[in-house]
Image (tube, rainbow, N blue to C red; front, side, top):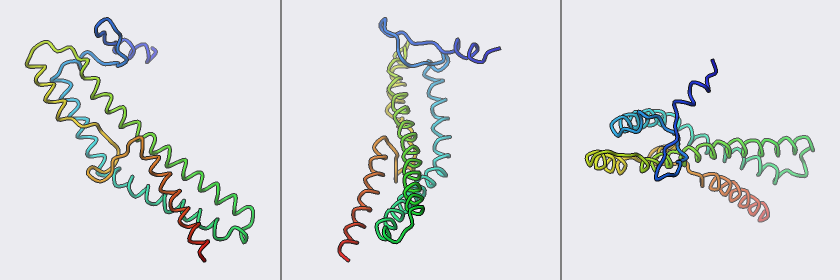
Length: 182
């Protein structure tokens, strides 16, 4: 039996005011008590995972910036002494590391955007009673979007890749200026 044939009927599009929403949900998650419990579970799992991966993200970014900066400095400093093979190898390592970490930051930034969209999609819920409306309003205020990074120190968003490229460019330009002063 096809797995898509099983999962697709479980998901339905929500109709709001005669318009079709772009969010796909399960019927059980449309109830405030189930939604709040499941979101709190996801939040707890995310928090536990970020104790490890958040620190690794900070260390990974620092190592990547240092490695790429060192490669750029080596190219600038020893351009005339290096063989062509070494020049190409160092340039390729710089490009590979920058692209790898850029993709990592992009995926993490998209995770944050999708988490924000999920919280915004809760306004499309059909709530039956005044108690549910009050409960969901309070619960929505309590929830923060999930983000990759170390809580209270670094949160990766879609702008993090621009900060990363800017940091590498700034260090490379400073190295170039320092070499010209010699």
